[in-house]
Image 1 (cartoon, rainbow, N blue to C red):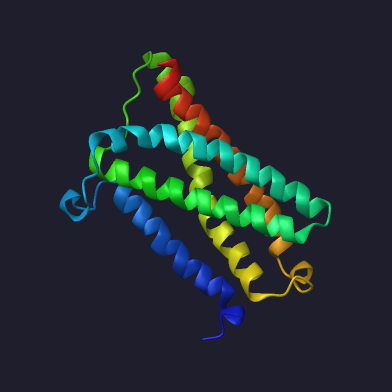
Image 2: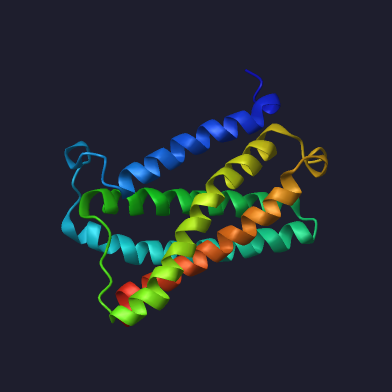
Amino acid sequence: MNVRRHVPTLTGVLSVVALGLVFAAAGRRIPAWLLPRAPEAVIAAIPHVNAAISVAAISTIVVGVRAIRRGNVARHRRAMLATTGLFTVFLVAYLYRVALEGPTEFAGPAAVERFVYFPVLGVHILLAVVCVPLVIYVLLLAGTHSVSELPDTRHPTVGRVAATLWLVSFALGTVVYALLYVVY
């Protein structure tokens, strides 16, 4: 199969598979016995490690955007691939923990939960879900086209949208972490 000619189709298939796994883990549809059980200290550390990963991903997105604006394609590529790697590690760790433990309950006041925590969490989740196909699409375009061809594809346009939404999602995820583990 010529991937280059089937980028939209492959994006759709990979997005369905990826989001299916995400929703299965988040909905606790993956039997816990299928997952090896890490020590409790490792499971407890996941939110804190993921917060650090989120901050690192925010940095790599900013570096990648600045690099491409300056015409530094090699640095842009390294930064965005680093972001993708960070996101992958974040997502695997998060889904592993949620599949085993379920979501963390908000311990703060009900008013803060209703008017701050849930809206921030909702937008964070929505943006994260929307980013999956966008990121897959731009990665497939970048992997199947030469640098000189990319300006003639949807890579620059979709990449700008994906980077912006990804940045906001990571930032809101950091706010969610702070509300769950620092403030309350």
